[in-house]
Amino acid sequence: MRIVVVGAGMAGVQTAVALRDQGHEGEVLLLGAEPHQPYDRPPLSKDVLLGKAEHSRFDIDFPGRGIELLLGRRATGLDPVRRVLGTDGGELEYDRLVLATGARPVALPGQSARTHLLRTHDDAVALKGALRPGARIVVVGAGWIGAEAATVARRLGCEVTVVEAAPVPLAGALPAEVTEGMRGWYAEAGVELRTGAAVGGIVDGDVRLEGDPGATVLLTDGTELGADAVVVGIGARPDTGWLDGSGIVLDDRGAIAADDRLRTSAEGVLAVGDCASFPSARYRTRLMVHHWDNAVQGARVAAANALGGEQQYDPVPYFWSEQFGRMVQYAGHHCPGDTLLRRGDPEAADWSALWLRDGVPVALLAVDRPRDLVQGRRLLERRTPLDPALTADPAVQLKAAVRA
Image (cartoon, rainbow, N blue to C red; front, side, top):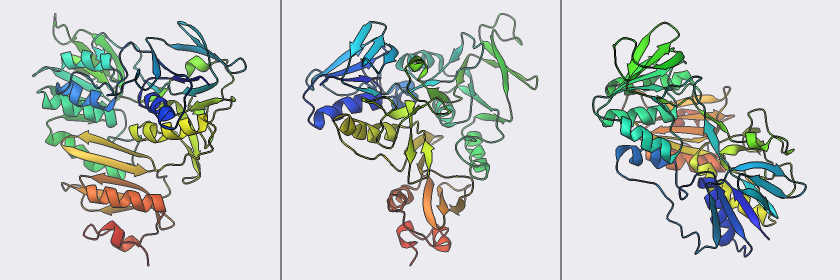
């Protein structure tokens, strides 16, 4: 049986490896659009930009594992009736197909030549060359990737300004009452944060300085920010446009609408990672999770079910972000109606917050509180009811806040 995996990021690589680990003896073909050997993405915004590592390639012996790499080859279409994958290098027949094409970063209209995205190895190499001491760096977006890019740029001695259209940082991920306190992190690091600042355009050349080779970020309020480089971190969208006409059902966000076994609407085709969403019985909603842990966990399930298994996928999502000298970790999934309990002062060096639904924890945010994270994840997994008063006391360990 030939199994083709489309996408050589974390989800695709881990699926291919899991197929071998779970006993598949047939062909495994791993298709990657980039010409580079498969690599991990999180280090791109950290060690690669900081110059601590030249690359983040996976330490996997693909030929030794019997995994055939088809690199520099992009998927262009799919005929699930004939079980044929279209690529820019010709058609590939398959018996089972796993879609792991990830997500594409959102670009600003009319980006200048001085504008950088941060998604691929080539993106990181290009941006690294611009992060020189004293360079003026404007980061568009105060989300996870924007905060990490600003952190690295400041550590490298750049002058950094972050512009965010929302009134607070991390507005798309967390409620304002939690993220408002993070505003001070930027000031502490020497980063100027401009919230409520929408970008109207980016043009080559600094309009304030004759002959300057940089760029100008034009804000909608008329402000002009000169920059030697601009980093755009305003989110990513599932890379699924190539599936047009295939009959594969997408959800309203453009993600492949997988079921709770990560199977798509086409027989023999599964989807995993950033390109897919799945129904969660735990959270009673359809989740689309663009984070490393989802790619790793989902790959094992996708591999098992590609081999005829019936494993259900319903994880507690988890991710982390290193920003401004802090380790920020989040587990679970919260909704606007859930009860927020703070553990500690958000102005302090470390603190955490939990969201409860009918007394049961559904999500946890930990800032430099690893014990809360470890204990909280166990409580989330087990859906253990908590005593709200004890939970809100930062001096009480979470495992001791279990409701009697």
